[in-house]
Length: 503
Image (cartoon, rainbow, N blue to C red; front, top):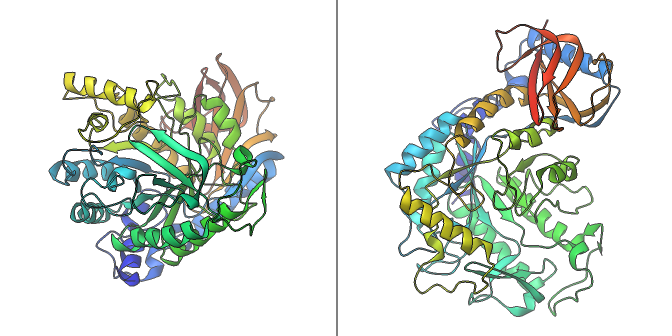
């Protein structure tokens, strides 16, 4: 695909999705618009009164907040993200894109989704249908899917990995991977290739650029396939590695260099980089910007511990509670953990996850009786056979059985979240000391402020007992905008509230 065509679909094609966040204007049909038509509203259409209100809101917070965990100016932020399950892979036949997908994409557009992240079921990683890890199971269908997304103002980030490749892949070379650096799970038998391997770089970088350029996508989702140095500093190098970078418990030099090269190429094309490293970890890049979004949560069992660990990471974070490990019952729990720290949970969507992918004839699967992926696929298959009408699961991180309340709950919180994170907003996260509260905040309580034309206050109670917070000024609850303005707020245990400053 020519670069100018990529820029047209990658920038203009996703414009309608930006409208929901108040960050842009236009639609997939608006490609001829000049670049300034795609500028954030704060640059393009704010009146003098809008700017006055924004600056007065910022002054209100600056004068009233003495200390906080972190302050951040929000720009170029698309928090409404979803994963999309194309169908089963491995499978007996390739998935197709049809009427169901069109209807599902209509639902996601109406929901407000701005970015779709595609996992590795888009590609043919074990070469069942003549492709490979860097080409689609159904190239024509994948291109059509991206076109359908762009027509709805939704951006698409396909899966790639800077580390993983099947050990059985004919292109794999053992000198790329350190001894024992293997992930075996379900049908995956993947080597973790070293970011310092010259041969691996020479092989994988052109492949990644091929994925980026060939299908008209809007960037990449990179599953790092890498364990940070603090996991394995004692392991020796491969015969193909070049010791060119600082490698320590605080710095992943080669990995950072590899991510930086990819980030530069994606940004050159006007695209987005989403990164996953491992669990709730971040890349140890010593401040180098190597992602636009960091996905955290895979394999994490304690969401409170994850919140505490990631709250200081560089933005923007997209948490995905892994329900296989994190037993989350309360429907609002994921939002309690995320919203006060300028994060928003991802929605899992697409075709139903049936679990049949774990029982395809001729595919070699893990023989480990404790393989959790095989177990959950069998559970999903049993449930799907008994309940073909749903509610559905949409991936291995989702609830099995599926839950009908997930999508409405996500939509309700997203509607409240988007106005408070529009472009040009300044956020003060985890306020420590402020005369904006009449009394010190109760234990296990977090308060964060977001200032633009309006001032929003997020109050989160991480304790199990109700609390009461007294504010100096009057606010109104955003889920009841016509309700009374108040200065005292009762927050139930394990709950949060989003308030808007009155007057």
